Image (cartoon, each protein chain N blue to C red):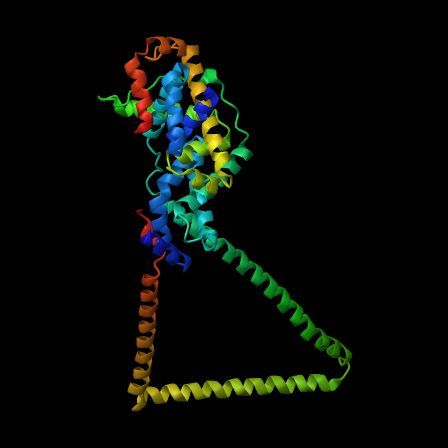
Length: 189
Length: 214
């Protein structure tokens, strides 16, 4: 066996990957070659020294830092997506508004000389004012009735029921969050 | 292993707490690899974090039949190699290395901590002499106990390439150490090859050969 070949086998032996058949040949070579014995001693000691050097550890809180970066990275596409959606929505809304309003403006411009247009607008405005007045009167009557008649407890019960349902909903949301904890629980890790 | 798979499945279904457990378990191995490859704590921290982020985003491509550690270290290894390529590391001259000396096998006394730090620096400086792929093979072999097959998987190479890299890396490390030792004229308790050959007794030679059988 040549020394170069023996050197390769030494490396395999250190890694416990040397087949038994070749182990005998290496031992035989080492028993007669002083240079390879030196090589083996150096390799063996160097390997042992290297194995003895401990693993380096990250500073405390590494997991929390990773999870924080993970949360940031996951949030980034949502923010970008939201902004893009908003921009696209605004653009579409503008186009739609233009398409809707433009024909109206054109029609209005064509009929500006017609006196009937102004008369029509006056009627519409007066009707709207009448409707608002009627609604205001209706609300006033209902509030007065609630404050003075037997339906007051019924109204209050209805309000309480709404509050109760809201509380139940908030509790359910909290429970759901506890089942899928967020990153806050990793803060001290 | 089963518990690990449970965490992986949970992480796949969106439970970040389960992924945090995986980070807890593997952070030291990943950080150590990054530190040994990149050579400083800041880069190692960043590379280790990035490794876990990439692992999370690629978790669906992970084969549950393979060891998770090897898969994770493969991601870390590729990321570190990429960083080294981008970095253009200035090569360190052998003259910059500290005097090399072999550490005793069992160092007693209060200097132990200092010697440990010394060993860390020495190993880091020696590793920095190696090409990145050789360094990676050494790190995966010595600090992660990966087999040739696992190293080949992690580095996307063949077992014979791994065998060759480890052999050459060891020779280069030994040469660096010897050149430094001889250049500095440090008394190491081990003389030149010729002196050692002349002074070794027959008993020591037999002992050395016997180590192979153990």
